[in-house]
Image 1 (cartoon, rainbow, N blue to C red):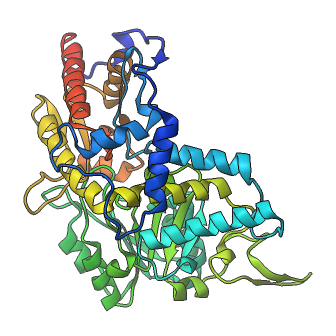
Image 2 (image 1 turned 30 degrees about the vertical axis):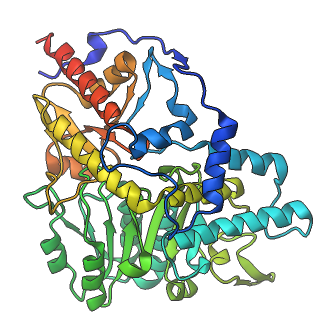
Image 3 (image 1 turned 60 degrees about the vertical axis):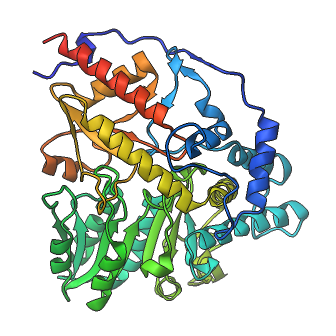
Amino acid sequence: MMISMESAVLKLPSSLRTISPKPNLTNRTLRTATFASSASASAPSPLSTDPQLGPGSLGHLTRPDFPILHQEVNGKRLVYLDNAATSQKPAAVVDALRNYYELYNSNVHRGIHYLSAKATDEYELARQKVANFINASGCREIVFTRNATEAINLVAYSWGLSNLKDGDEVILTIAEHHSAIVPWQFVAQKTGAVLKFVNLGEDEVPDVEKLREMITKRAKLVVVHHVSNVLASVLPIDQVVSWAHDVGAKVLVDACQSVPHMVVDVRSLDADFLVASSHKMCGPTGIGFLYGKSELLSSMPPFLGGGEMIADVYLDHSTYAEPPSKFEAGTPAIGEAIGLGTAIDYLSAIGMQKIHEYEVELANYLYDRLSSVPSVRVYGPKPSRSVTRAALCSFNAEDVHPTDIATFLDQQHGVAIRSGHHCAQPLHRYLGVNASARASLHFYNTKEDVDDFISSLSDTINFFASFK
């Protein structure tokens, strides 16, 4: 019988206080700003790290840059392990937002005064930073959106409604995020296109060979994640793109869980479309981006109508601006874009390859520790020499609801994890569960964070077991 914590323990009042003196924000801001000013994709990292997880690791060196991590939650040191939902922000990003609103807040592209010119320069510089970060051919291939969800909807309504017809196939996997499924259901209902889904293989990874078989001449689009937010698996996107292009199909890549954690090169992958969200890559909420090959964006009709996306407006018709302006109607999230640019400076200064190598070590440590906890079932592939897992683990503990686990970890131990279906209900149904708990890491996490989580989880499971 699954025990509910609601009948076992009262909810404790939250308390929030600092557990160590605040790091010197001025010094830290100057340090990260110095990194950012010299950051580039090829620049050496300013941080000298050891690939191991102990003192001097990347997690220990970057942790002081994140003020939010230096506090107590419910009387315990905060252990933040919900990074797949949203990442924390370094002080430099917070400062960039404050500087915009305090020093040059103005609308972009429309004013000739100093503040507007400054805001426009910084906004467009952020677009160039995104293009450089993913190695796009140019900044015209980067469209700012509210988030990755809006970016996928943009492709669905602009490219999808214009190019899909009755009987055309859109190939997906059952491990896709809802935002990569629902828009295509809308489009399929309107066009008569057919959605086909690839199941998991024996290793709990989307069956790549089956995916290859499904990509026939009837396929017009393949929509796939790069890294699963539940299984922690990594798909061979370059191969998927090659198979799709062989039959004339396009590929849209959900890179929300890969762009913040590894080197992503859109020209090397040859993806037609790719989406990501700022808030998962140490940037502000409320902004994401769509990468699209320039010839595709140029051929697509506008997604929303309004200011900025036009060339000329007449009473009976309008003409439209060139991409990316054609897809950015209205006043954009200016401060958020500038903050995203600063986050990219910060990540680039460390080095994405360095981040990836550290997180692989951390991912393996998390998987090994969690798999050793009695009664715990971890989903996704086992890491090996040939299989690399992302730094997250979705799991369930026998006879304990994942929401009870997450609640108890927070209230009794100050450990923040996620519980629920993680916007992947079809995948959870396939796995035979309604929900799971998920611990997800970023480069500012440490081995000690994992140890605290495992100790707290063991205590949580023992607490519920005592009621049997």
